[in-house]
Image (tube, rainbow, N blue to C red):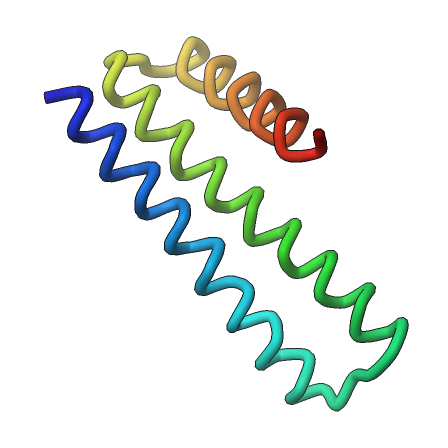
Length: 89
């Protein structure tokens, strides 16, 4: 059961990133950005979207482990930090 929940969360995370790319492009077009300003905006927008996805995934993992309170907060914080570090590589 956990395996299926994790697979579902990961597929949702992948879909979120793809959706974020389209959303970020739309926002950049709406703001009529071009060149370096557009590149900078897209980079920040995609990074923010990735962070939200990591947060959601990590909260799902914490729920699977039935963590609550300080243990949950600590786990999610470390999980998000590890996700960001692995994404930067």
